[in-house]
Image (tube, rainbow, N blue to C red; front, side, top):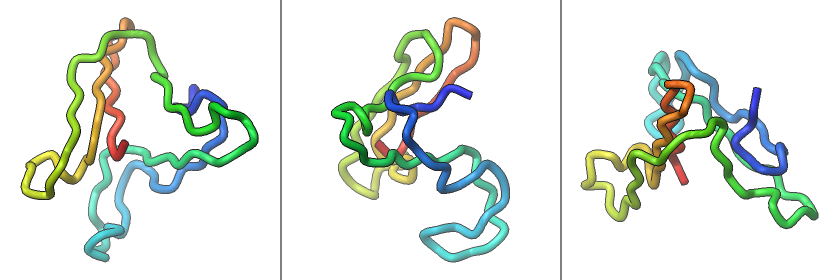
Length: 92
């Protein structure tokens, strides 16, 4: 698996599938992504996010208020991969 951090130093903090919602506390809520958190290190690039596939950016958005319908994803970038796989990088 290619990790989304240039240094490769990260941990999974929320897996794909059913979970307890971290905001509402509701159990059994389906999570459609995998959440990573970068680990700090002495490397200058430890927190630099990279794409896990080659492709083109097809969308990006900076979310400024929770009245925006995309607020739950926070700032995000979408990369359409050369291999046909589209990856969304959210909570940026």
